[in-house]
Image: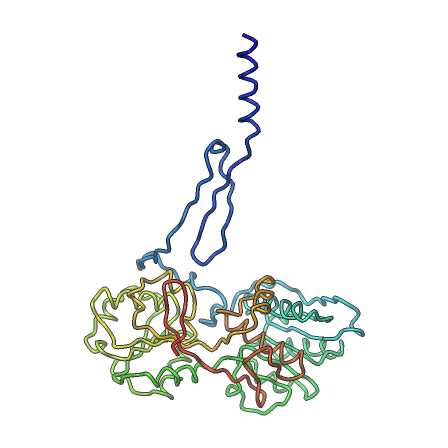
Length: 400
């Protein structure tokens, strides 16, 4: 009897001390993620689960506007968030008299969601450079003259001459009045053509949708058609299209709450057309799926930076995107630099605002262009080179 009891004790101790098993979960394009198995599974062997990448078929009633990822600058409504993540504070990392780099970052609360990521990009870049720096972060709340003027007064009081300012084109008139020639102010969201005045203190960093549309138009087979949205960016793209391409056998406005895509895509004139989609990610995904659903096949479909987003592969089927060509102005940078910025929370691969910020802080840090970033600044504006891409199951492939 004692032997039997001893045997039970040994068995109990052996299984009670058995280490918990883990599951290796493999996701497409991701590193392995280890997850703990629930307590009940401790006696089971290690299991490997492989999840296949299966694009989700779009259903109109399951798509909402807010699914658009941040950073794509789709609409002024996205720039009107009241959230502020920094309140007029100075982040002194070392004695400013010894700082190698003194920099100010100014933004209005209305673009705080972009400001957060841009600031992460700046921090990642300066970390990569192992720079000693003094960073002044100012939320000026809005783009009124008084608020912008007050922000730049603080910058001058601190003796800082390098500034990254995340203002929209609405602020350009005020900036021309406030920014003096002894400052270097980089503007990630504004193009040089948006300013009617000349100011050597302003450096313009926004990507050019005009240049992207020009690049795309080279591959048009004629019989052009164009869809656009009644939003800030949608109307801007429409104006660019009208000035660069002009003619269109079909020209349709897509309403913000549009759900009846059958009446939009079921148009015989779209067959064998060169269709330009100046629409956001969600609307573009719906249009692509509905074109195929109603057997309407344009010869080629074009889109700008607006849809250079990996979510496109999730929201559409492979066959929906077979004839889609996308323009992208974000260039490749050093892998270690990209990894450092990613660690800090920036995204210079797909978010053009972050990439523009990177170009600017690199320019200010080096007091001019450097070979670290392929995109260069000339005559106070960033010169972007658009490239064309096709989509694959897992990402984008450049068309050479």
